[in-house]
Length: 151
Image 1: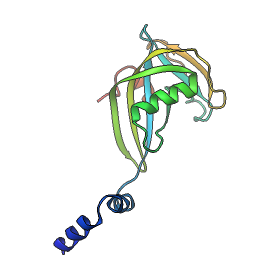
Image 2 (image 1 turned 135 degrees about the horizontal axis):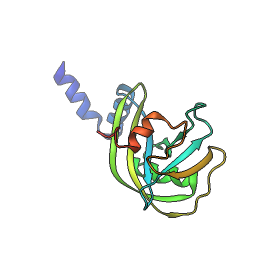
Image 3 (image 1 turned 30 degrees about the vertical axis):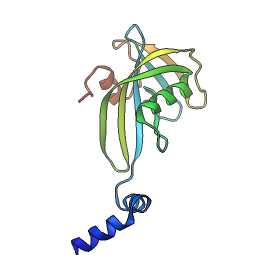
């Protein structure tokens, strides 16, 4: 039986193998977050319109588009939400186990642009030092800012 399966697998080649894998393996949405800092060490925080009341503040976040490199997701999301340009640096967190979602967090640095928030998604935006974090900040994001959520 194993030989038959192996022969069938090798006979499928490329696109058909990918289709079988897609149907039989776990498929995830990928949530990507950026810990964006400026030249003074402050972190970019956004008050998100669509997040739960009392926990609206957090870092720039969004879902990766199909085929998008995760670091590029941070660059795109920050640009869309704030008008700012960032460069991703090191990967801080890669975590799965959330049903159909995995989470990726990158460290990023401000490289330019002018703050212009997307008022559909974002209510406010600002730069904060670790000892001046706003009320209503996501606990997981607070830990990341303080270096407690990095493995």
